[in-house]
Image (cartoon, rainbow, N blue to C red):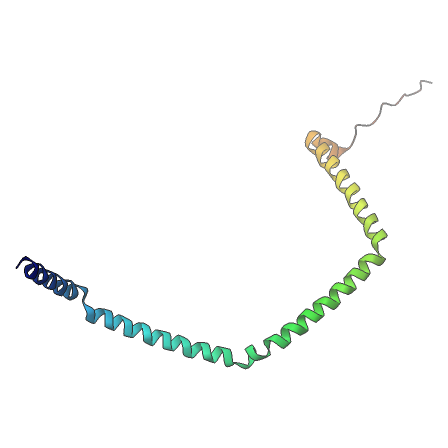
Length: 127
């Protein structure tokens, strides 16, 4: 008797839960999702079959070949001009240090930039 009562309560509870889930709304949402997936699939097929995408691997290979050639030429230029590049870099380092000194002096002695050192003392001979 108790077992039948419990089964009956379970059936009533499940029926209420199913009504609360609103299965019809889930079905509508699933249908909308399926329509969106089909549309996306159609667009993806168009993209994958486009001529641009079909020729992209060949264009990519050509581009990579050109980059490889350019890199080789650049390596040759750098190897041939290594001394000049090293000298130029050293000169830039020296110029940078000089500029730091000039700007440091300009901060400490701004009038020195505009007017220079004061004139030295001169000795005037008496006649």
